Length: 386
Image 1: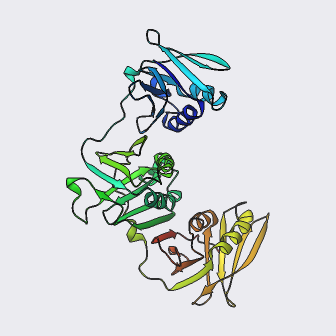
Image 2 (image 1 turned 90 degrees about the horizontal axis):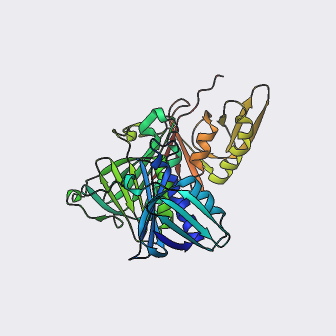
Image 3 (image 1 turned 45 degrees about the vertical axis):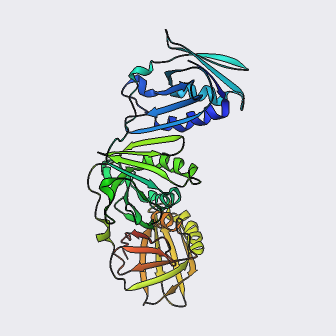
């Protein structure tokens, strides 16, 4: 194999696909990237695959001789990243020894590769469900929920985001057991039905995608917002996203996602409305003290349309701040984990946010006052001793 390519394009492709290389590979070849060159199309394809997440991208180059080889990901990344920007990079592979010679105008590097024959194939979905999804709608649903997923691997299903694809809408939800983010995006014009099994208007495809995979899918979708649609294929626990020159494949999390709609109360006896920017700024200031100990902030609703926000870190100090509020109930006290509260508030783009509560010990719900995207953020209060 013999190729010449642009350093910037080569480096970008390596950084992109290396996110799918195993940190602790079970086989030496899984620490490598697969590089394939096609003389007929003058294209180079790079693939990373850890057996759960796979990323493949392609770019234009001068291919003097076709071929394929796997190259140690970490070494290749560090070498190409440090080569002079925008300069030509040539790569020659000795097929008899799998030795790789990388050359630029400043010098050369010799690496030992592994034959591509043993590299696992990316799983491609040949049957099952096929959809065209709107990139901007998917991105919106993802950004409004991914932050609420769990970091605790023992919680398995909760370490992902659940997506329900319907020809009329897209719904996503994430929870870590302490809070829940749900968004419903109207998509009646954005899904293109492609599968014979997906004809009924009420048919749903419900999948839970690992958060780690979603971080990379988010990058792919962000780059594809100018496209009309991204192809999605699903079958037997395998999900494939395809845009113009990139492919991401991921295994989904197995099992039935919790019926989260049952967690959201139907009615609320107490409503209070804050200016979103002002409540975020106040909480960030109070959090300086709250984070020193328990991360708990208290919200006390009294008279005069002001809420008293406070934090008390024993033996360290305390903080209070008054924030304008509109509410239609008697005096009410409630406490939250400040991080959970801030993370939910920061994805709300409306000018005002409405807190809906019943009791200081029952779930509270935050919604934008315009709620264009049907976004609901449920957070469990913290019980504080008097």
